[in-house]
Amino acid sequence: MKVSERRACKVIGQPVSTQRHVFKVKDDEAALRARIIELATKYGRYGYRCITALLRNEGWQVNHKFVERIWRREGLKVPQKQPKRKRLWLDENSCVRLRPHHRNHVWSYDIVMTRTHDGRAVKMLTIINEHTRGCLAIKVGRNLPQVMS
Image (cartoon, rainbow, N blue to C red; front, side, top):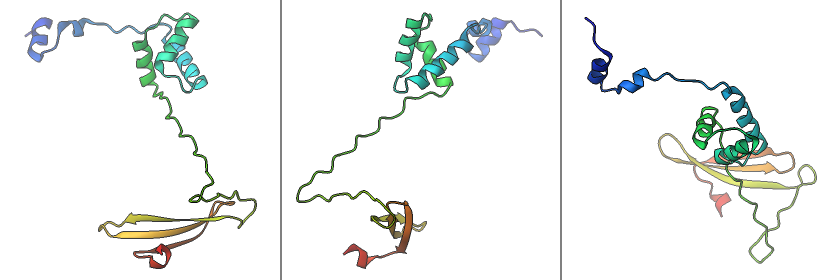
């Protein structure tokens, strides 16, 4: 038993036009994709809209939706802006950060806290040599009272 295309589409709730549509791949899509990737690597802070404007200036006839589709397909993203480093002001509550010149010149410490699988806290005191970036010691404990005072 044959079923017409129109009836089959009506049963599954799909428009007939989607069955009859033939997807056409543009001839220059590979070259356009390569050019988009090249521009994205050259201009790292530009998004797909700026890249579209650059492509139009070069003579490509593209719209932003097509460039965005290629942009997403290739996994391109604009990186997040890095925060500016704050200046160390010299006032009564500040400390001057020393730059290490040789090994064992400047050490720094930090207290890191995490939780175990049962929810109990674990504290770690880490001491780092700033010049070699090597860890000199790690003291682990549930309670580090002599360090905290």
